[in-house]
Length: 557
Figure 1 (cartoon, helix red, strand yellow):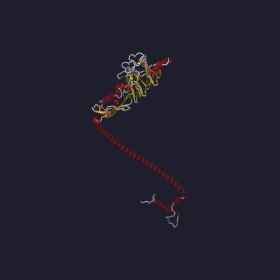
Figure 2 (cartoon, one colour; figure 1 turned 45 degrees about the vertical axis):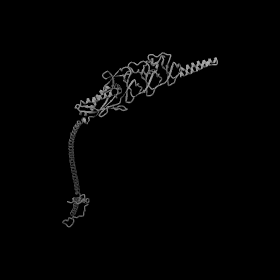
Figure 3 (tube, rainbow, N blue to C red; figure 1 turned 180 degrees about the horizontal axis):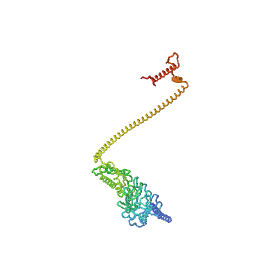
Figure 4 (tube, helix red, strand yellow; figure 1 turned 90 degrees about the vertical axis):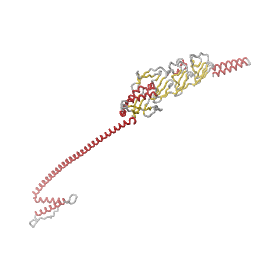
């Protein structure tokens, strides 16, 4: 824009000068000369005006009237010729003459969402010996770092790759000093932690060791299990890990190693590939070749083994420091070596048959040994499972012999059980018979008691009846005697007979006639007739009663 104003001013000044030479009068020629000067000065003034839009940055380069840059510097901070450290903010700026300065506008530096800006500077102090990155700027001083003048003067900024990064946003920076490259942010997925290995800084000073076996606790100390982890500003594996999330990490200044912290399983079984299986959710199952062991009695056979382990987040830096990561070849070699050695060593002390029969004991012993061995690498073993032990080829004959032996033992046990059952059945039958006999004896004894009681009851009833008869007879005799005393014995007998006739319904017409010596009928003969009739009636009734039982049928003797 400044060059345009200058060209227009010069053109108008030339035209005015031509008019001054060709003017009709001195006044016209003077006015043309004044106009030429005005246009020339106005063009020069307007040519120094520069405009920067709101979404731009003005980069200024000084072309003349200044000292040269020295010591290999690229950016000028003291008016030297070259690219100036200060940039032009949005708006109008005056004094930047076209020949002396060149002003170039560039867009703002933009870091998009989910990205991070890696910074590399073209000027500054040299990096320290052995360093590939400039140290990270403090968070509270980071904005001043982006001021090129402060960076190159008071800030003491270093030339080269910076550990600090630009987070998502827009920045008004001097793009001739700061070169920004956008990369994706580091994302740590669920079930993982990120371990950072700093590629710059001072040597690590933190000494840490693994604590008690199997606990995965990191404790301060100085012994054979010592490892060195880096703190802020130190080079090496950082002690602090990043949990799941997104982070603006400088992937040039830091090596990011993601370590799974979920439950993992190493499966040692027959007929699998040597490479571990993995999926998008993580290598939860690692397939390895089978383990072959030899027992103290010389049997060699395969063992199907599952080892469950976990890497706790606080132990992840130790795993990275010692083994690289949880999917590296070195990690697999250490794990496989420890597992195979443990099972082979344990098998050497037992016989094959005992190994088969004492699976739980082998699991417990192997778990204890593996937990102690692998804890030195930050790996916590949580369980050991033994599946199939041996096969038909290696243990078939031994297992068949054992099976036959067990079958024979079971048959013996079965025979003994049958004998015991028969004996118990015999005893049960005897007990039941004795119970029946006791029941019959008890019934008989009870019947005897009942008969005795019935006998006593009948005797008592007979005695009572006899007593009753005796009392009635005595009473009746007394009554007869009193009647006889009053009316005479003959008349008393007659009265009793009449009672009998009335009670028994006896026919009183005489069928028996007793005739005495005289011709007339006397009192004694009448009495005799009555007595005879009564006796005949009583006898006939007794015969009828005897001949016809209760059922009405005549009795047959």
